Amino acid sequence: QVQLVESGGGLVQPGGSLRLSCAASGITFSANVMGWYRQVPGKQREWVARIFSDGTAAYADSVKGRFTCSRDNAKNTVYLQMNSLTPEDTAVYYCSCRNVWGQGTQVTVSS
Image 1 (cartoon, rainbow, N blue to C red):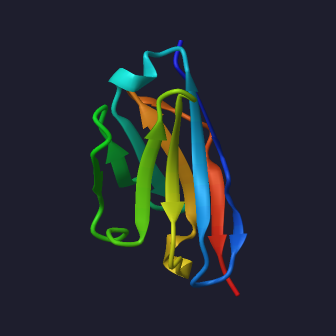
Image 2 (tube, rainbow, N blue to C red):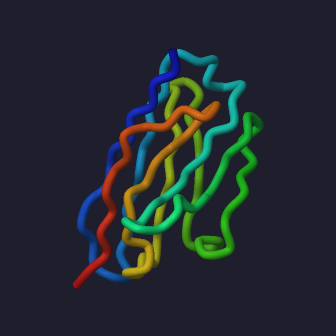
């Protein structure tokens, strides 16, 4: 079965950077679209980015120009590089594939 494990979250100051990772197993990773989402308590889960099997990526307007999604098919891992973080980026970040979700990783942006 598909398993997704996120890592890399933490506390960062405004303007800082973090890189999230999501390791996948149980799928032919290179053939699948991988997505990143985030959720703040009390709000709906929000789409952040997705990366296609050919490496092209799409982003939500709220993160475009600040976040970069990439993948390493040899490691079955997808990354989310987050730069110029603001407190509004504080959320639990999830990766997803085929409607399967990881456990999430907390990102907190605060001074």
